[in-house]
Image (cartoon, rainbow, N blue to C red; front, side, top):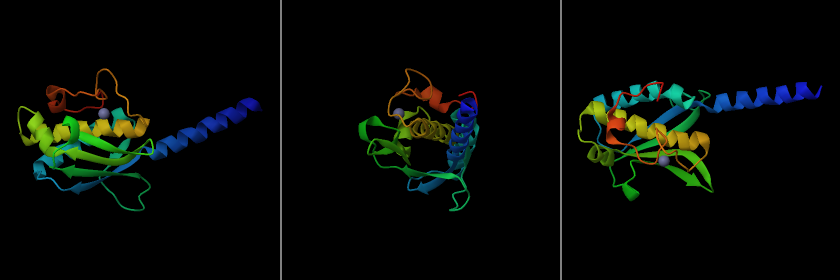
Length: 161
Ligand SMILES: [Zn+2]
């Protein structure tokens, strides 16, 4: 009987996590970004979603059952050379994320839409890991490293990321 109880709790926990990982990106575009860059960005997020263990849509309706993630695209200067940031309130990483688009453009050796869009997707992917893991720490390498090399940011995102 004890074993059954443990299994039931595991199933319940799993269901809760899955539900939280249906993410709906709510974009607030305050930066100057081209339609092509936005398309590459959206496609990049869709490609990265499996590596985040998430399903990602850009359909930010109030009753679609997903967890909303508020993403501000800003051209204002970033603090401490950041390319993106997730708001932390009372020790909790919230799904309120800023992408510093001008900082991203300046960080890359090319400002082609393709590269800027991919880099925006990777920076958002990085910030989403902070939220999903509820962690402000970083890995020593990979998408969740504190420092993301320009070449990595410009490479095509994939589910293997
Ligand atoms: Zn980080």
